[in-house]
Image: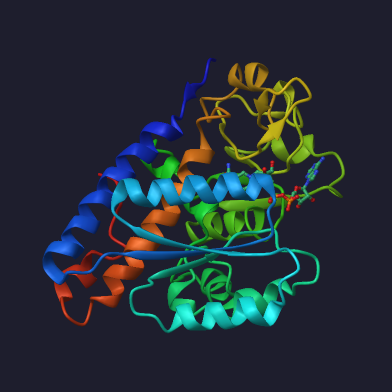
Length: 300
Ligand code: NAD
């Protein structure tokens, strides 16, 4: 079997087109421009690249972004005061704190200061809890993007065996919850899992988010499985690869995401979706029609 490629770039392009239309509609009907505040502490070069990409993506679909930079040794209280100010600002519909934060910051305290109605990354405890009980204001972007790719590719989820490799708070755990909420039978593996292959071989849907190149080899994958590779790894020769041996796994899987060009483009796209959904909710009292569109299927 040779796997069909799930093209994250083209799914992302479709969703971004819809974002643009939704932003235009907000402007036309309510005079509202969706606003995203991005806070970055320190000058980590990788974080700076991610922030630049997010700001460019916002501009492309009609979201006004507002960037706030703090020095690496800034006091936590100063950043939290800014988050509270932005939480109360009606022009701001989403607040994002670029991670990682410097070591002297308490991550949960910082994330907890974001108004849960503006927590477009979905990391606030309120939104995490919402995911556990089967509904959430803002689904976290990376696993939300994976779900959309599965749906857009016509992958059936209910009743299938899903295996998630990686159990982080931002990818693996919310991914497992989203699949469980769609009635998959979910196993979660992590660095302490013994004999990873005995789990992965059972997966109809295999999601890998470990950050280890070539962790998943061909024989670890069930014939016909759908494989989503979330991993992003830079090899010493500069090449960007995922967590799967792409060639070997492609010969076993029925569908697979490439790296780059798979999950990556979807993550930023779902941030745009969450920001626009938030702006729409802020107008909901004024227009029940728009409120009804919130949470509607994103792709036909
Ligand atoms: P993390 O380091 O926070 O978590 C990694 C998880 O993988 C942990 O639960 C760990 O136990 C598990 N793990 C590590 N080695 C393992 C092994 N040998 N076998 C089984 N499990 C193992 O990382 P993260 O933030 O969840 O990111 C994971 C990967 O996904 C990274 O490569 C990251 O760059 C990538 N990522 C991509 C996107 C995207 O948009 N495509 C978004 C977020 C993260």
